[in-house]
Length: 541
Image 1 (cartoon, helix red, strand yellow):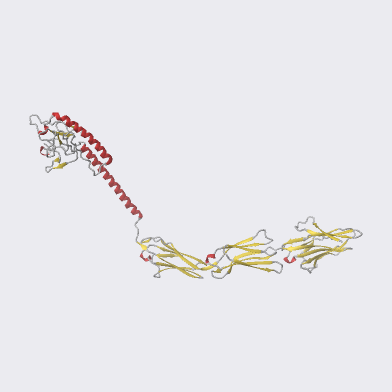
Image 2 (cartoon, rainbow, N blue to C red):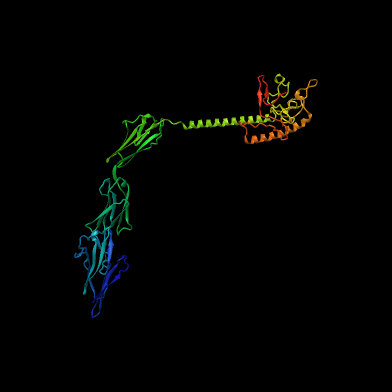
């Protein structure tokens, strides 16, 4: 009866360093143990080195070791000796493929470990450490060597022409890898992909993938990503690709602002073209064929040195590349020259300034007129007024413009509607003069007095006053003065001057039947042919 078991190799760094360690043979006479310790599986990369460990565990003094051999099995059914060690005859390397690459690490039968240098992908397979013993025969342990290869990854975009058929626009490849890699495509373009796998003679695998779509001009420059995953890589490998789709030009003309006025010097047009590959030629023409003398062309830019009627035309821009040509037209319109904004501002400023100055003058005139009217109403004589005869008046008959007759009725009015009684007393008053009729320095003081005739002369009619009625006339005069002051204040508050004349003031008749005094203070003076000025309503005596 035989029982096999596995044990960990002391100090082995391999992750799968498990091995068949011993075979126990049970017999009726007793137990005899024989052990060959090896690593169960190893991984390695080309050009590197790998150590294949082997150790015989002593089963007792009855077991005799004669020699040890390493046998390579690349595939099932094929066995080749690559290294042999004999205590008397030494070491031997019968396989020429390993002769210069294999060495024994310890020159003794119990530890016949070997090292293989400069590994190749074809070195993959099973390696058996086999002992020739006496009296039990051969004992062995097997290690599987797996060769790994990092793939050579690459990706590129394929230049295509815009069309209506599905074509490969990008390719991605993971070459000579082991095990085989997997390829994925990440994209928002909306295409599809196809993948192929091929095996190499050395056991490597090459994986190729193509990304396909129906290309358009809009797809040019868009991104697709190739992603490669494989066991030997620490992380997935990625490559970003920009698609290259060629197409004929598309043309637009920019820069026209509908403001080409005569004399303008900064008018510019731009011929913008989208094409792949880039345009080879850009040509500007007009409806008449040739360009005006005022036009200068620089690459895709058309500059007008000075706008005139010659550029009131249709411009054409034509662009070509290897896939075709395209053109665009634009009609420009020349308008009359605009006024200089600075001169317009100057004129506007002058007009506004003139209006303000005129308003100031009008305001000043109104104020002065208002002041003069108020002074006249309050008794200030004008420059040419004469308040008494003999003071420069004409013909000795000049009177001040405020001289008025006051009539006091005797109780009933005459039928002629004048309200005057020719037989009644006659009153007069003068503003701003003294008892002799001479102007005084107090124009706002109203003097009511009798005019006396000079000594030795006959009294005039206007000097005859009834003393009994003088007090009543004085009272009425001063009451009227107060009402005039109030009306002046209201006139100044609401009117402030202008062309509105203040109302005339009249003393109305009383309710007692007496005819009251009529007083006219509005400006009713009238010039006479002889140069004098008299009132149209007052009665002079």
